[in-house]
Image 1 (tube, one colour):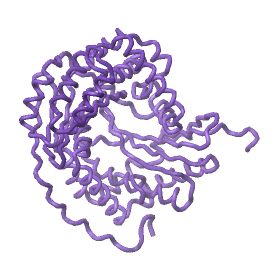
Image 2 (cartoon, one colour; image 1 turned 180 degrees about the vertical axis):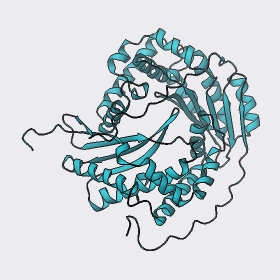
Image 3 (tube, rainbow, N blue to C red; image 1 turned 45 degrees about the horizontal axis):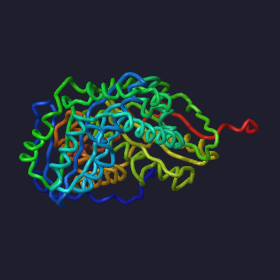
Length: 437
């Protein structure tokens, strides 16, 4: 009997319940900012997601971008973090800025009646951030503390090691700057980065909640009208194919580590590829949820890992299939061998069964329906595709394709993309004991 088979066929998926029509506006402002506004009036709250492509080619760019994200929401003219937080609290709102190698993202929410005030605050930060010395130094200290904390996290260290192993010095590997790089950045660099790269043209703003989309777009055009058009936002350079596929895992010794972190990556399919829905289901059968082969074998039957999963990461112009799990050092080698064996099986002599595909399909569609039923989930689901330039209803089309994709295409996707020799691997953990064979 194939893995995952119980001998009883699952009933077919029930027909999808018709979703209530979604009132939505998808347009571009004169500044070049794409705006998607959707009405989901379940509670009197509005969710905001603003994404600005923020690619750069140097390590110094990474450090300056982090400082910009830290100081951006401290208020125009150097008002200060406390003053901005007090204004947001008065209208039941919040704003948060984070940056990575690909984009700078501002996430927020606010009571519906406070949306005009939140937009005014956001506009002030986008157009009038002062980066005065006191604010900058305070935020630099916060950032340095966070970098030190991040450096102590094994999962983050393992991811960084995998990216370096796969892509060398590509900008995608610079998810966190070093303390020295942050210390070397001055106010002028941060202000210049804001002026030249924090721009609306090529960026996207998503608003979801208790709103009237057409009206809120008109208000938004006025509120953000001072955010000058400027140049086109800068996208990160596309990723090359991961280096070292099929080679033995790179051992990354970490003194004091008490567990091992394994990370694997292989080329995958971008979400616009015709074969993407089939690969989504194949990946889910392999390691995408609790009933997957990876989890059932390594955690439930063999007890070799604490937790594990696989996923498809969408990147600028490319995609990565990733696998990750954590284990005790004594189980690490066997767990990695087991993961590779499961990849060999699912891409070879034991392809996904009809029962496994039905279960994965139901899980994927169920999670998507659950996410789209909430304001936050809908905003998060819209953000990635909209920033990538896809239609605002892309998630609906994906659901239809996931429901309709034939089982044979899922098995073909597993055979083509889940081969163990396509993966680059790293294993982070305590240094090897020289007295152990």
